[in-house]
Image (cartoon, rainbow, N blue to C red):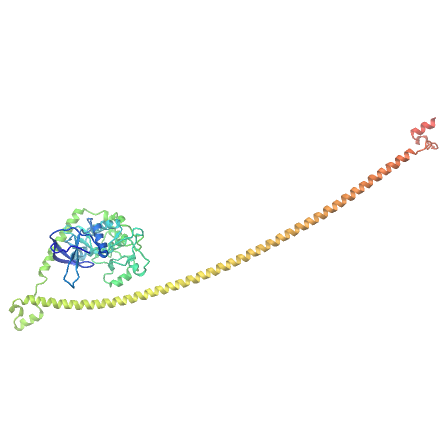
Length: 490
């Protein structure tokens, strides 16, 4: 990667703070050169993000990137040149305010400006991922600027979610912490809104919730504790409602940036110009007081040992030796620095021990969760097995009942067929009997007809053979037929 050396372009004026990956200096610009094209992917992402999205009134303007060449054996320095915010961070403003608490109107104004900057980022699918008081700066005109994009991320355009565990513990959203415990967990732009809610509490109460705990302990408690709320009842209902809206533990139910910009706490701000004048006056007074403290900070008033020496009448080395005061101060500063380093090492060892203990607790809890999941899986498998056996038995009973019904139906069908055949046989027999009777009756009628015919034939033959004198000797003439009478009359 080939970048311009800033020598002759910028002069370092003073160290003003520390960022995510380095120190922050105030510089004096000599000549402005255009930014050269980046070639290395490692820093190209962050620089491109600054180039693309710093063109907003609530994001510190990006001017360029330079490489400071160092002698052999010393790493080169990468210089990111951005807009200077002379009033410091919101955290500085809180520390320099009486009671370490900002007025509610100031809080609302700063929250609104942060939301506007976040809305710009979220519109471009960018998550800041480290919103906190230290990363919200103020200019000398009380303009609010978001800085420190060292951990920001561009969301995937198709999925729209991230699953990287990054941020500052006390301000970190529960869904971001969940990514450390569950690699399948994801989050989106709304994680910045949780951090905004914590920052609003920081501005109201002087520090974020759980700040008195170890960061690892805070990471453990944030997903498990109820969402934080304002401790004091002095704040308005609008402010409390705004905190409740930003600190919704389920990010899918958390309002969007646009919805929060329409919240009464943000919309119903008093005169913005008046608020900025108040903030600017406060910043000016703070800078003046800080300048007085800086002037007196290195004044040397002697030590207890020197006071004892003066009481004994021994001469003071500071009075008798020219330049000793400066040497003495340097020596004392070195002693204090060594003591602070020792204290820092002790604290570091303590923190390391606490970290190890906390990791052990986390591992124990994770192991417990794994065992619980195994037990749940075993119970689920047993339940599924029981349900499978039950379904199998039910299926078997159903098949048996179906077989029984089928056999019963076959039996009834067979009985019906047999009954039908029997009836057919009976009807056939009855038909045969009727046929026989009809034949008998027909034969009988035929025989009767034959008998009648024979009888008629016999009677006809007898009538033909009758004698004319048949009735001659009949005593009663009336008994004679007519033809007989006639014969006799003759």
